[in-house]
Length: 610
Image (cartoon, rainbow, N blue to C red; front, top):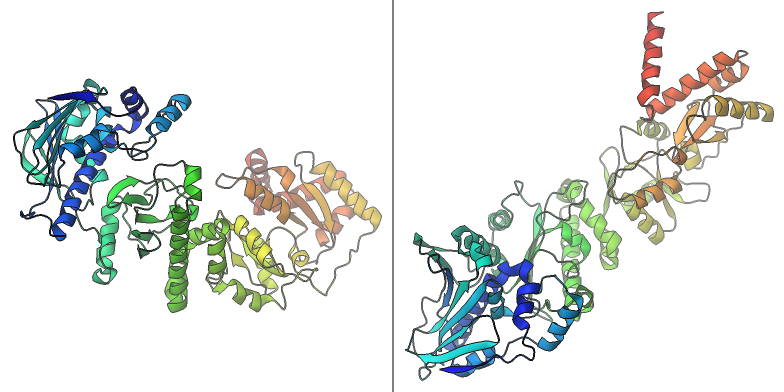
């Protein structure tokens, strides 16, 4: 019987494992089953090379729960270990920079998860076990079986024992705090979470249950040749990944590349309404069919967080900080590859079947918008297939729409004006004014609209996006016909005084006189484009609180009602006329609320009874 110390330069490795990995202790099972999988895959490789004589059929992994003895067993019939290999892979903790790791986590007192990030593997067992035992038998016929035991200190016991079957059995004697892992359903859920698609069949059994069940599907859809998969196969796999998703994915991209990095996977485009949900049902990251995380921040562009599916790559390093991850060459290349595949797929759909692309557009446009705003390469490709819908449901690319309106929708500076509305109901009166003049109006209702149009205006300096209610229509589009005020300067000054006296004590709108057509309304309430954009950019994702200071009251000096107000000799009648017209204008903007709305309705009902 040998008795010695594990080769690690610091004696306090076990307290650090227990303390700093506690929040992520469930991944011990992933690590042990992953090691068992590696052992079997190595055996298969050796067999292919003809270096083993015995039959290697029925390769499998078994996870057994023994509630009575408070143990969990992880058993494989893989390559096994010799005495020298146990000394190398177990006694010398197999992760790089042990001393640096210990120093780092002692100093920073970090509680973040690092299992799987520093290659601790087998030693994650000690997060939940007070004692760990290994029985192992190498495939090499002349080697003896080895017993190894450790009770969570740098001291271990190791000896040769009676010959066993090929492979390795790890027995975890659970500590008092971790008895939850003796529950069958707890282990079942962990295996389904981390090991559902591992390449070697895994069985789960318990001393309390008679039946042994298989856990995983060894050849998931993303590992298969795309030519062998039908639409139904992809959709079935989508619902297997996300059982709570009631609707089908719209379409998908099958990823498969082995140079200059290895990556497989399937990305699904779900139906996304005009909102951004970053949390639910995210993309899963796997390494060699082992589930790692659904947090891909730093691995793929942010806009892909709106997609669903799986990315499987052994070339994504997990032992570095997020800042280092973003600068890693492999990760950069993977990110570029995925971005290109997404843009190529969308471009192909647009060119080959535009009608079908337009039908799906409402559900995917926010993904495209997010990608255009956040990723330069994607923007360059996407601006060719990004489509705008008019209020009548007709679709145009930017270049197509620009060509359609370039001769008659320009401002005083000669820029082509892309008029748009964000709410067809609330902005109906403004839309009607534009339609009366035969102008085209786009419908842009995304929370990302303001960011996207800023970017497009920078790329196309000859165009300008203007929301339909940001100014009187004849101020937005340049017209040869000019309207001159019929009011004298004194009348204009009197008009301002009337408005300020009777209206602006309660409302803090800025007031501006405009020489508009007699057909236009006497009052208009607008939010100038620049102010509204600034407000929307600063409140992305939050409801905009209405604030008087953003509104501007436009007074049409040429309207007949304005002249009537000025000619009215009685001050009280002036006040009534101004207030009534203003209330109607507020009502049209959904700004007449609370007490003022109640008073307005009461007054109207009173007038009806006279």
